[in-house]
Image (tube, rainbow, N blue to C red; front, side, top):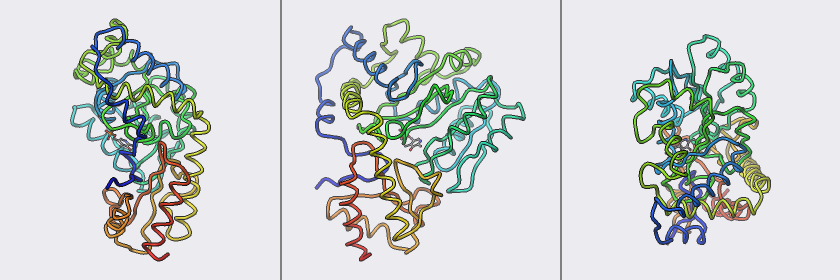
Length: 356
Ligand SMILES: *Cc1c(COP(=O)(O)O)cnc(C)c1O
């Protein structure tokens, strides 16, 4: 039996979107391939509220995260971490020999504008990474306030991880001054895993020109130059299957209306938060709580494994905590094409199982 996924990626994929993955191949050096790639870029620009160029990568989101920090750090990167995915960005920097420092917040706490100001004021950094939505703690960082600080440092390249939030909440990339905004297919976009997408500014491209060792597969400048020269075709063979499905899903998202989509996510989030407060506790403070997933403190010390086994028998799956929070929290994702009605059904079943 299929288990309906309420985990923060991969998510359930709508049957019609899944069907597009099975479209027959075309040559990746054909006019049709160029048309497909340009169509995706145009629609992604709408979702991201940007006029910057869009790059597609046949990898998960981590590929473009590694590419961004390696391609565009000239001096030193300031990596702000609010959990597992910020930590990963720091590991990517060090694994590539990119000089970097990590600024961590306590688990469950956000990156604050003051932390960013203090780091950038030292003049040591020319690139920063921020996790927009930390999928381990369910924190959504105050990115508008952070952006105001970053704008005071025009030499700094602003990289934003929106892997678990883009398409689920309003992230106006150009207004925020984000130079590289990264996401991947298997979370709020509602597609199978396997493709990553980023926007890239001219400023980031100019920075990359000054970096000597940018790697190859994830060299963002090389990808950019290639698609300019080759009419939006990529250096290596892309996952055409994802591209068909993404192009189709983006139509569906724009048809739903981005504002409606964001409101649907918010409505689900508010419902889950209220439920969490009634029966357990929230990890995040209200003002920083994520709109796309909720991390709940396991105050009743239930066995999350047992709960998930019982949910599994009824065709559902939620997520335990991540990393250090594995047993002390659990997570319910409310992203992509999930509806409030789905969430209500899930929470009712959890109440039945736990006798809440
Ligand atoms: C899932 C996730 C990642 C990693 O993305 P992949 O597509 O699995 O490589 C990075 N950052 C955040 C916030 C995530 O939720």
